[in-house]
Image (cartoon, rainbow, N blue to C red):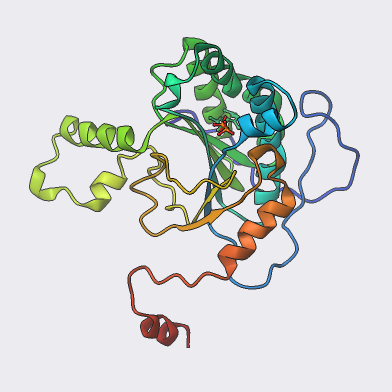
Length: 276
Ligand code: FPP
């Protein structure tokens, strides 16, 4: 967690204007909130398994690297649209602890992604009130990337509009292992360990559990993602490859969530009674 808090940089006013690149000129102000959507309010926390970069590239006769670049480009519009829709927290699964077993060249390319993302997007995110947080193990990443990540977290720590978590070198099982190690290191007696004690030692400490988990490219697997936190998440699978997952796809996912009945283990009659 960042140690330095930046001044709060919450919701900004909407303003029309040209579309300057994030790297140069003034950052683009985002709209206050999206059009009202029928059904339930927006999920507080959406988590996305971004899949299909490779297939997107193959379809176009491009390299897998080009697919990942297109995937990284797509982050901007999805983050912005989620913020405008009123989502409080967005988690993006960018590199799993299992992804190290991919070909060396591809791993090398993926390892460059967070640094490039920070360079390209951080200013616009910060100016639009977005807090950036890393989920996962930083230790296997280069010193310079660790520094970039910590600085991005510190710079945006006081922002309140939406939290964007980049899960990078993240594994759900590794996260639980790390939480157990932290419990032991903190000397917590076994009989006092409860769910709250574990949750407060996960990478996601302090964040709401994901209400909605989206996976792109048609796959129906959790792939070691937020295994503790997803106990009562709703799932949504899109056939779109991640680089094609645009604003309309975001709207479809949010609309599907709006139509779900969430019971958290209770009976339907109890739910109906509470809503009446
Ligand atoms: C899965 O698709 C995707 C990944 C392993 C990488 C996802 C990474 C990004 C979208 C960019 C990350 C950006 C930042 C800021 C870290 P795949 O390559 O397995 O696709 P395939 O199943 O079609 O081959």
